[in-house]
Amino acid sequence: MSGFFRLKEFGAVALKYEINFLEKFFIALKKHKKLAKEQDTALLAECLHLLVEGAGTIKYFTENVVNEQEWIDMYYENLKDFFKIIK
Image (cartoon, rainbow, N blue to C red; front, side, top):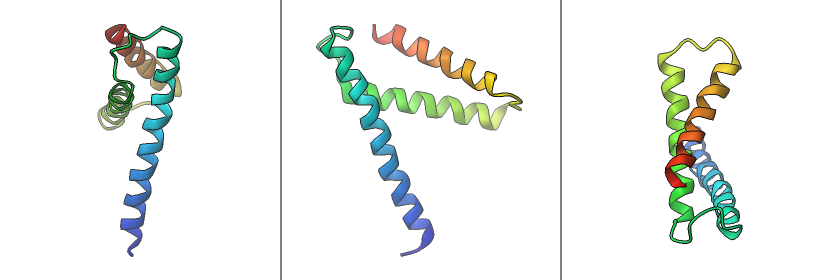
């Protein structure tokens, strides 16, 4: 098995763990009635993960980011918008 294939396999497993981790937060929100019952927690977790990863990738390739505050601000805005949408 090549090193590239093992790295790709590791990335796929890590991605699943990240999404499962996020899903647990949505399940907790639903349990505490902060999220509507009809909301699909797995889908929300996957969408949030893709939104954050996509925003980070776009910022990385299109902007010259000098300090970490710019990254924090970008993620904060994306998260704030996401939670406004699902509310």
